[in-house]
Length: 605
Picture 1 (cartoon, rainbow, N blue to C red):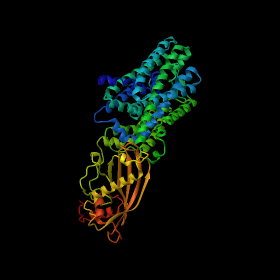
Picture 2 (cartoon, one colour):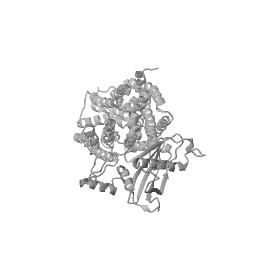
Picture 3 (spheres, rainbow, N blue to C red):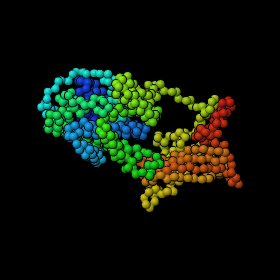
Picture 4 (tube, rainbow, N blue to C red):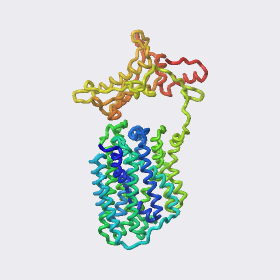
């Protein structure tokens, strides 16, 4: 039985390769040739450090990545999907624009399409546990091919050695965006979340796995920096926007010197980096979307096949379309890198705060709008260049995360007192009902806020001849939940001596999905509204496996037990319902007004 240390180490190759997409693979060449060796270090060290910190933080026993994703993952779906689109687009663009076209000059579309299809097929067919083994096999092959290219490049014309540093205004402006983007980058990458969840499930150490993966990743970046140094600075090109780009320098140097062996080695090394990125992106995106569709309560999910919703094919096509547009217009790789330092950093910072226990909700749309503004500022600063704009851009992108950051720092707004104000000068009475454990504490029923929750597990007794739950049982479950709700709110109700009957005036239920035997079900019911004579109860039925099964409402009326004459809602019922009435209730407003005027209000027991 391998030790925990060895079980952790075997994750290092897939961690390193999944993080070595176009941004790392080709941009390492660009920064080395443009800014010298210190420029490469300023790029590589924060990149590897951010990868390590992600695993180290989520290795804490106080944090459970799977639970974090389960509770908050839906809020960050847009972040994860945008990150994968841009990551795959950078990878496809880099392979086509920085290797295949400079090296071979044609058929790039066919080759990229084949690589994309092959990678997606692998990601679709192979789960992460076996994908990890594939990446372990890919790694030595890729490194050997890269070293072969490096060895063959010795036959290229001798070029001046790279300077230690060649900094300019643009470099200094990029320091903060580099730090912010790389430190937050792994948090927005669902590939890394899938890995850290699987590592924790396997009983291994995410800290060790990501520490080793970060060191290995740093070594792979250094290999590409060595290839850049061997190619020399004589192959920098000017893109359509007038910006210098050195990402294709290695391929151009190989082609200029007609080094066939170097071309084979560099192509194999780049192809392995591409395949191990896209198969991982496909696998992780499918894993994310499958989990979201399973937990979703959105009505649309009942009509769209889960396989279609969870399929990453549309995202891969979108990434391919973006890459094709970039290649066709001869644009620089930097345009696909901008989102990782601007557009996505606000949501990523919110996700980090969530992992640290912050309870405030993340506003994805707000962060997206702020991030777009930050991207525009960054673009204006990069083209000019204006270092101040480049420095300000990631700070602007982080504005949307300020409320969560303040809460994390302990500057949380004070919680309202138990008797919270409903109107100016008015307070709502907090009634005490009969003790009832919350459903999450193990009880089968009880209150969760304003909802009364009943949990049950259907059995074969609840199914019909076809095998699914018989439709009438959903109505019966709602009725059972209602009776238990009443039993808690009006515990002294006695049918033999009551002065009112409760009748069901109407009942509606909208079926969404079906449950099956032994699939745990939760029935939720609450007071939606009321007037003098009628109470409307809203209900929802959820499956732990399939999400929302259906929802509806019922209207109750109260009648005299002898004449069946309609009555106003009895006072005992209003008092029993009081803690769970909607804030818009006129009865709540009257009680609050009474409190404000100093009148004595009898506690509800």
